Image 1 (cartoon, one colour):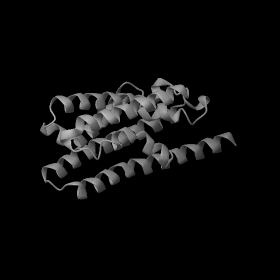
Image 2 (cartoon, rainbow, N blue to C red; image 1 turned 180 degrees about the vertical axis):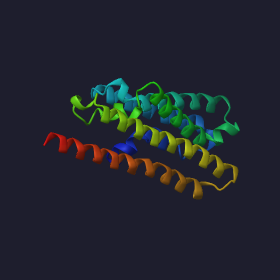
Image 3 (cartoon, rainbow, N blue to C red; image 1 turned 135 degrees about the vertical axis):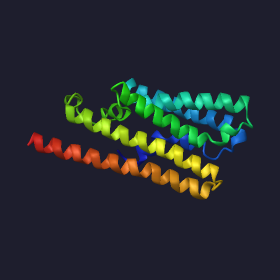
Image 4 (cartoon, rainbow, N blue to C red; image 1 turned 90 degrees about the vertical axis):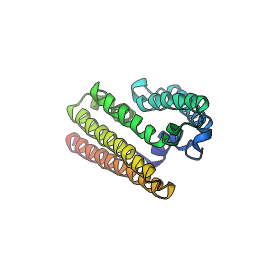
Length: 188
């Protein structure tokens, strides 16, 4: 996983950050349009649908948030969109694991040979990676909820987000390196 692909994957969520809660309808609509554009580009590149679970989930959430933002622009729920967003991402991660299709597995299939896809090691590794992301997303939802309740603002909320996303990113990179090292040993 490269940092630029990581950032691009979260771009629909990133573009809504500057929007205050009373204009979240517009921010979420922009995020939704970015998510739809990414889905279209990925499909045009031949990305399989199962590799875009997170993308579809992001688009669905952002569309719902946009509609809600336009219907109830002064709702307190919009002020907690960061908490709701990470809770939704956690739900996607855990649901994808529950149905036996961890969302990271679909993304990884873009980067590994097809003969690896059905190996027990590949499946086990992506169950673990998706679990790490799910726990991180859930932890971020709780931590940002606490930041919101304590009214600590962006000065605390931003570092919490960065650390909460950096940890699973680093662990994912390490897991991928370990898989590649094991695969190279087996191929020798």
